[in-house]
Length: 314
Image 1 (cartoon, rainbow, N blue to C red):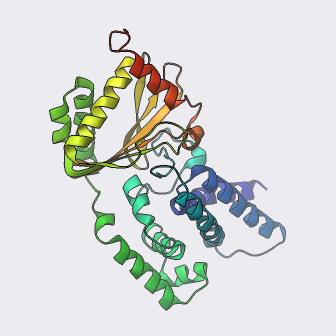
Image 2: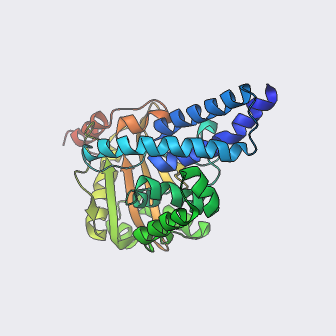
Image 3: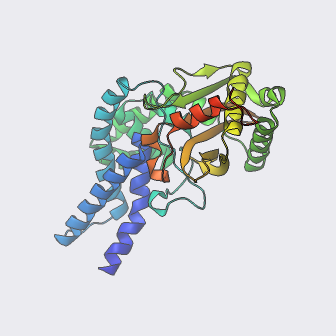
């Protein structure tokens, strides 16, 4: 029994990693992971001989995720505003339940690129590129021929183009960029902040219709810098608001918390060399609950708009 528990815990990261990358939802990935591990347990209880438990759980969770993604895509068509993945904290202090084997292919930019693909292409590409499965193994998981598996991966690469390899930077350059980014925001230096943004930078906000958020993506260094600076000023007006640095989806980010330690929002940066290529802000409370107690972003924002930095009404 102890050996089985140990096996299931060893399989959890790969199951969760596949499910999360397929769906972009922590809650749904948790559900699929539990279902896949339950099926492994039941198979073992029946006395089935599982030659490769990793391959077994990968197959189960991938097929479950493909079915789930079809209904999730229909829901996203009715989603209010921009859709972003639920933020996943991947640093050393991350929740063990959400541990993933690798942080590559987890960035918001990459996850949004995956939305271009069909469910079959997405599964084939992730299994091949993120988890190192051979085309033969991909074919077995998807119950198709090896030639078709190759075609699925090739089509996925064509749809993604060169974008999937763009957002990479050495850790030391990334850390320095992030330090300068938040220093400029803290100092209220709009010009310095704009200089750190790529010309085609994009700012996305996900409120899901639950709380105020950007109605659509904001593009361009000047516009994004002004918007971010406005947000920074609001934050300074709300007493007790803190920025907790965090590794978000394998990259730099912060968790914004109120004075009671409740989560207000999560901000993720996507570096591109020496510039920030994208900023993603998740304020939809439904996408933050796995991180702890959530403070209503709308109430937080209203408090910031009603006071100036000296605490007097605006």
